[in-house]
Each structure stands twice: as structure tokens, then as C-alpha cells.
Length: 409
Image (cartoon, rainbow, N blue to C red; front, side, top):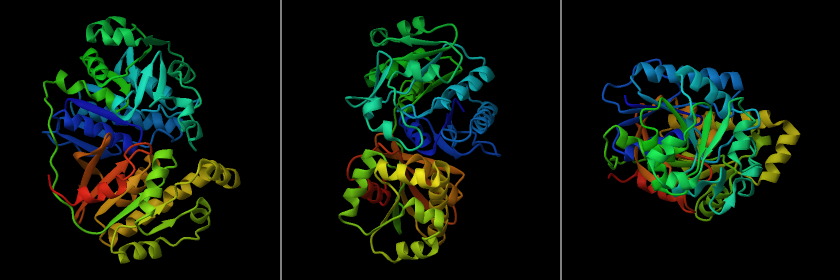
């Protein structure tokens, strides 16, 4: 193994796994830190954790365990994969986990760059933009768990770590890898500007030989070349059978995708109160899914105002935990009834679904959209997955993903 990735959620894990696979590496996504060795011919391993929103001590412990396992597998470079919108709170978990990893790896002057230009995430003068909006005006200010109300990543990260925060400007980045490397500090962290894919490639080159870097999936664009890999297109073998769309993300993009899919498909909405009070029966719901001729939609995605109302009434943690437990139990029921195609929207929802499916290793296939690959795991039968970050994918993503699962490439 050349590259080891510690991802702080499940959709982010498949996101960067796709970037590495398209760079020519053989990649697998592991669900949590494995208790078994990786295959000898694996070039990159991506360990998917739920550390973005887990308690701080748990996030640090899990991240260090993943780091240690990846090093034992031979990983020469560790990437701490975070969301391209830098999802976190004033307390973390990005800064504290990054501190723990940099101490474990004796890494200084660590590059921090969550930019993903292809998906409209760019960093300029230390500020994160989503398309043409500052982060705090993009809708992320309404995120139910990690509202982002400051676009200046230097300030955001400085709240989470005692280490010094530096900045490498876009003008420096545009001059290439040598100039970037010269501007990296001897200690602390460097927020590095990036507005184009070519910037990400140069940043990757500048990271050659460094033990640790931190960023979104775009950070991996320049890494395969450092290890002499060339671009490739992952293959896919068709998965037939029943399908379902499960959506828990409340992002603007996902709510639009939900509205689009509802126009042509049967659907059921699950409110937080339903999950908390047990008003919905997952066995009955699974039977309903199987009875449909075309894949239906089950969603808890809602307007942020409604989410806040539920959080106020029931408590943020209780509401989130109940909805995740619902999706986890429902996924297990669906798998038991032979569902083979799962399209999932939202990082926390994806984690719950994968847990319900008891998947341990996901094979990475070709892209469905920027940052979203086809995934497969083998239980009693092959199962296809699409784990979509809330803001990713076009308006018709759900239908397109289900269709592509059925076609070999």
C-alpha cells in the first residue's frame, strides 16, 4: 500500500477513493478500521470513520487506530480526508484529530486544503467558496450538525488547535509545486489556496514525501503521479435487482434531488418524530419497497427550519441518533429481502446504511458524478451502492445512479 486515507465520514471516503482509483490505483474502502490485513496488491486503502460528528475523544482514538493500521499495511503517506466544506464546530473535530495525527507521524508544516474545484469548492485568500458564494452564505450556515458561519479557514482552524496557522496564497500556488513547497512553514498548518484542478495537482506534487496532508478529495488529484501511477477508468459489472433511494441529507442540492425524484416515483417521508416515537415500522416499510415495480424513495430530508424545530423539541443528538438508527435498521431489512441497489444521500445517513448492511470492504467502481463513485460489496449476493455527499450530484442523480448500476462498463 502506498497511500492511506483516514476519512471522517462515509461519503467523503468514497469521494477520495474515486479520485485515487481514477489516478490508476487499486483502491478499497474499509468500513471502520479493519481487524484483518489488506490485500497485498492494494495501492491505496481508505478507512471510513464517523469521526466528523462523533465525540472528540472517540474521533481522535478512532483516527489514530486507523492511522496505525494503515502504517502496518505499508502506507507511505497518510491523508486525513475532511469535507470540502470544512464541516466542523468551534471545538473540532478537524483541528484536534489533525493535531493527534501530526504528533503520531511527527509531521510539521502540514498542508490543509479542502478545495475541490470540479465541484465548485475553491479557496482564495484563505476563504472557502462554494461556487460563487462564501461558505457562510452557501447554505452550510444552516447545516443541522455542523453549521459553518465563517468562510475564513484560518480563523476556523485556529479555534480548534493551539498550533500556528499559516497561509499559502493563490499567486504562490499558480507558480507551481516548487514555490508552494518553499512557502510551507516549518511548524503548524498551512491553509493553501486553490481555485483550479491544476492547482490541486501542483499542491499534490508539493506534498511528495510528506507524511501527512489534510483536505477534501481534490487533495488526491496530484498524489498518484508521485508514486508513478497513471490515469485509469475503473470497470463495473452490472448489478440487477430491486433498488431503493434513501435520503437523509438536508442540503439544498439533495432537497432538489428529492423533489425531482418524487415527481416520477413513489415516496415516503420519515420525520424525526416518527423515528423517535417508533411510529414507523421498518418491516412494513421494507415490504412496501419490495412491492414496488420501480425503486421508491424514503427520505427524512427537510427544510432546515423544520430540522431545527425537531432539534428544539427532541434535542439535536436524540433526533439525529433516532433517524440514523431508523435508516440502519431499514437497510438491514431491505438487504434481507434481496434489495441489491442502494442510492444514499448524506454522510451520516450513508454511515447508518452501511452499518445496517454489515459491509466491511467496498470495491470502488467508476464515477456517477464528481466525487461519487459506484461501490460494490459482496455478501450473500453482490450489492451496488452510491453514497452521495449532500451537496453533490445533479438534479436527476438518483435515477441516473440506479440506471448505471444495471449497466456493465
